[in-house]
Every structure is written in structure tokens, then in C-alpha cells.
Length: 430
Image (cartoon, rainbow, N blue to C red; front, side, top):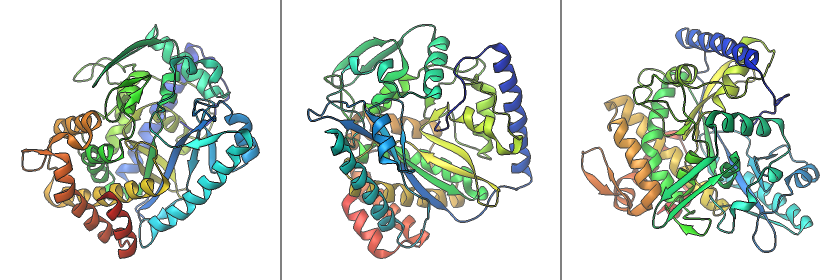
């Protein structure tokens, strides 16, 4: 949901107009799928890294407006809270030396941004949740001054008809109420994007679902929240509960949550996710975008208010052809640039291998097993026990060393990744 909007107040006519436009664009996307008119070109990758601005006491520094203005870098942007920013990379084809290229690009951007923070007696930090964060830091005065965040706050609280209830049981128990959506800003992640050919988009999406348990476990670095030791990756339940509003009634198991692992695999087409968006999620931000339907602006904005941990996106080639990207949102930010690149390489390689496996052999796990594996891994990390292809439970750490790393290496090889890149970053995962 990175696009700014022109208004933050809406009436019923706005919601009806937006929903009508959303239905038109969803049908148009259906037609493009049926006509196979979306991009089928090579896989391309990129990433988004969310980070914290902190002061000399490692406490949140709500300075992103002045900081970003003076930084003046198109690869850097504001996040929900004034103490968060996002850094991006340019997209690179998934082949050859992509990971050393990503490493160099992200390292340069990070070093420049970190150096710039020193001008404000601050520093940049990468972590899933900041251990020094206090509930009192999460207030609307620390919300970035953008219409989209004010509108999102108003609409989510209106839909909830009350405060946000946080209730997380881990090694300790955290329970509190919060009066706005700022709890969401306590979660910072690494978001990995893969532009995928139409023919394999749903297979790559399903592969990403299966890979999620391993990725969230190896990247977990955020057990602490508001002084409590909770899950290995407490960012996961925090984000789900921070935006816990349901969709329309009528889904098989009640209203679908806006932040979730999803409801099922994409069985025949990734289009199923966009249809679910229309069928099961009320409009949150009914902005009048006044653009042509083939730009899919309504569909894309609506999709940006639904936070699946693996989220399909619609984008465009330079020639205007629509394409599909899979956004993998499970890894925590940090803890260092080289760790981020290694985690990225592991994800891309594992997802490719699992995608190939699915194409050849079919889905190896039930969706409920993949979903349960993910939450077990988020809660217990590498010590979790997950269900695998043989139907048995395995300790994730053992599965990682005996099967998943070899699968990732095989996937990188099939991408045509250089042996040097593959060895460098997979050795870090080992």
C-alpha cells in the first residue's frame, strides 16, 4: 500500500463507486488471464527492506519526514510510523550474479542512508520488532503525515468498532488494548518480490506458501515485544492482530482475515486470489482514482489493504503489458545486509525448487499442513516440528540441513545462479 491518496474522508457513495470499479477491473483481469495476455517473460527479483530510525538510546526517533526529505533518494520512502522507513532495490533478472549485485546495491543504499541518519544524531536499525519500543510510542502523533495512513487508521477502527485487542501467548503472555493502528508499525520486514511468468504464477505462489515455514524460522530475530518474550518471531502474531478485521460473511470458515497465511492454495490460477479480494474483503479506502480500468488502480489499491504473508501483485512491463509478482512477506528485517541477501537467496532457490516439484509431481502438502508449519515455525523457530512430504513430523533444523538447503542450492542452479554466489550465500545459511 505504498501509493499516496488524495483524500482521507469518505461517504457511502464513495464505497459503492469504488466497489463497482473494483468489480470491473477484476473482470478485466479475468479476461487477461483467459486470453493469456499477461507477461510470460523471465523471472525478475527485487526487495523492500523496512528499517527503524533510533536515537542514541536505541529508542524510536520519529524524524522520517525531515530525514527522507534531506536524504532525497527515490529508493527510500516513509512507512506508517515516523520512526520507520523503507529502502528498495532495483529489479534484477534471477540469474548469474544477482545476489552479489543485490548485495552491492543494498549495501550502498544502506550505508548512505545510515550515514545520513548521523546528521540527526540517529542510527538505522534492522530488526523485526524493536525491543526498546513502548506502547506509548505508538500514537497518532508519531504517524507519518500521509493521507493513506490517516484514512487507513480511521477505516480500520470504524470496521472494528472499538480498540485493537492484542493477546499473544508465547514463553510469556502479552495482553493489551490499543486505540489506533500504530501497532502495525512495530513490525518491520524484508519483502521479496518475484516477477513470474503467467504460466507458473500459481505454482510459484504455492511453492512460496510451502517455503514460508523455513524462511520465517531462519530469519526470526524478534522474540521481544513490550518487555515480553513471546514467539521466536513475534512480528507475525503482532501484525495479524494489529489489523484484525474480517471480511464479508460467507467464507467457508467465517470472515477472512485481512492479515493471514491465506485460505488455500491457488488451485488453477493466481486469479483466484484477486477474485477472493472482491468476494470476501470490504473496501477500506474508497478513493476516486479516475483512471482507465486497464491500469488496475482500484484492484491494486484494494489488494494493498489485504496483507497475505504471500501476496500476488499486478504490475506492468515497460511496454505496458501487465505482469504478476509474488511478494513474500514472511522474513524479518535484518539483522545485517549479508544476512538479508543470504535469506533472499535461500528463499528464491527453495521456492524455485518447490515450484518445479509441484509442476512435476503436484502439491506435496495439504494447505492446512503448510499453514500449520508456518505458525509453528514462527512460534518455535528452528526447534519447531513440521509436517513434511513423507507425512511425518520433522524438526525444522534437521530438515533444513538435510533437505531444504540442498533443495535451495538446486533451485539456484536451475535459475543459472553463479556457483560463487550460490556457495557464498548458502554457506551463511548453513
